[in-house]
Length: 159
Image: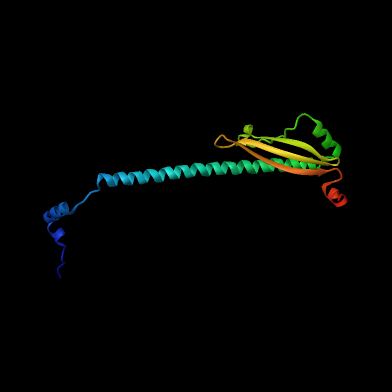
């Protein structure tokens, strides 16, 4: 039994001539278009990563601000009416921000304001501000009301 080899393998000198005649290369225009598409893809990927890091930083700061403000509201909720009145009249309205290892808290601050809605009702607003990943100032605020006899007692007894 004999094996039939392709003509190009049986006669290497002819295969060399045949490959030279049929070989084609990319033109300069094709290479430039491919390079442009590659540059566009890399640029898009870098911009997407940057936006992703920015969104992650914003989410982290929003979560931290929410936790700080909720904690402050819970602390204020445990105070008596007289203690709140004293706190409202004090000059310092800054909220203590806990230090978190591995984060830059020096750009984070939280301030509370009191407003008398009625004689026995206070409106408390907390505003947190910080600088984000891109250097822009971000802001978030929470608002609640505090009744002298408790919020629910106020709504049930006052019509």
